Amino acid sequence: MMDTDALIQELANSAAPVRRLPAPWARMLLWLALSAPVLAAVIWLMMPSDINPVAAIADRRFLVEEAVLLVTALTAAFAAFASIVPGYDRRILLVPLLPLAIWLASLGEGCWRNWVALGANGLTLRPDWDCLPPAILIGMLPSIAMVMMLRRGAPLLPRVSIALGALAVAALANLGLRLFHVGDASVMVLFWHLGGAAVLAGLAALAGRRVMYWRHTTSGVGPMR
Amino acid sequence: MAESSERDQQFALLMRATQAGDREAYAQLLHTLIPLLRRAVRRQRALLKPQDAEDLVQDILLSLHQARRSYDPDRPFLPWLMAIVRNRVTDGARRYIIRSAHEVVVDQLPETFSDADPNTIDGPYGDPEALRLAVKALPDGQRRAIELLKLREMSLKEAAAHSGISIAALKVSVHRGMTALRRTLAGRHQ
Image (cartoon, rainbow over all chains, first blue to last red; front, side, top):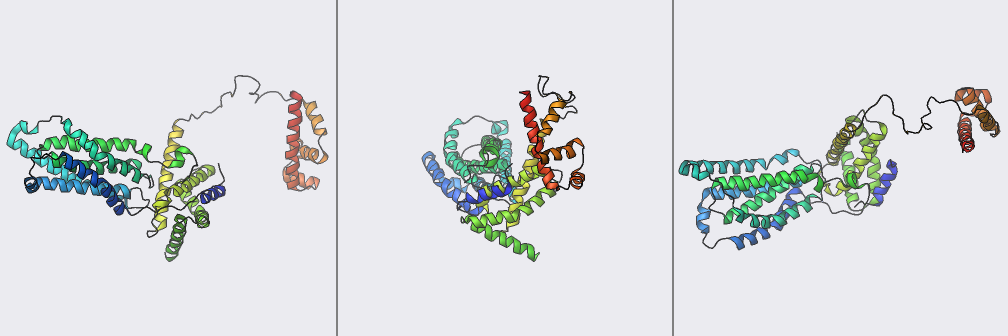
């Protein structure tokens, strides 16, 4: 074991100036600013020409769903950035569950309506692989930005931080996808979109400790930054 | 209360200077934090061996170093620090549990080598004549120390009173004498 005084000296000698991390809300806005152009570009490319934006905006359920997705993305991103700041109130990590619950409730209600109107036919599931490439396209840059931004903080809860980051990306991708998949039945959205988001967050959580870790615990003392 | 808030402000100032690259402020901050960290580790892991506790303190220092850009000087310092301490202590306990799950506790240690020579706990004494000669060949001071402390099995205090040599000088002489004997007897065997 190294002498503690010697370690302090070594740490002090290697301490270059660092750029302080901005507050979680400011980093959330920065992440949104990085992600929004990609989202807008994919939506612009994929939006079918026969879609009627006025009718879509008049659809109250659709608007609620989009608003809830945006709030989920923002709160999850905020919670992810707060989770890498030591001493931040942990209760903030639960905030994204609220919009998530509203989204789930809205989809559940949609399924119920379809069931009442169309019977079992209203709840048929079919794979829709068309929406996978745009989903990946929308999600890629926000994912990379999120991981890079999270790795700059303290890996106190790596699994939770990465899962929240994945939830933010998934919610944002869903927000974009719903703009050109307007006609989807609620059950399709519930299964593929929400299910996809859950799988993504789960996989991200599993990989959390590999993506975010205290550097000295895996790679020894140096090199220190 | 006012005192702890003043102390917190002092830490926050040093940390702000650290973030700006002031190495002296950083060394001062870490030195000031050490007793606090040792206390925190002892409080949370009272049964830890001293060297393991010090390992944990060093782990906290390295973690603080990595996380130093996440500190906002407008927020209190100690909650920031203690969140890192709790994280490292919990992680340390987790690693300890994983490590001890792979350890087997035995009453009797197994033989270290299959060869008979190294396993001579109950073996016969070596050559007493060779030992006597080797002791005789030692310089006066060392020989006297060996005789008093090892052959007549006196305590350091008794030997000091008996011979009039100081305890420190006896310690040095007996240590040097033992090293010399070991060397002489090992040389004889080769």
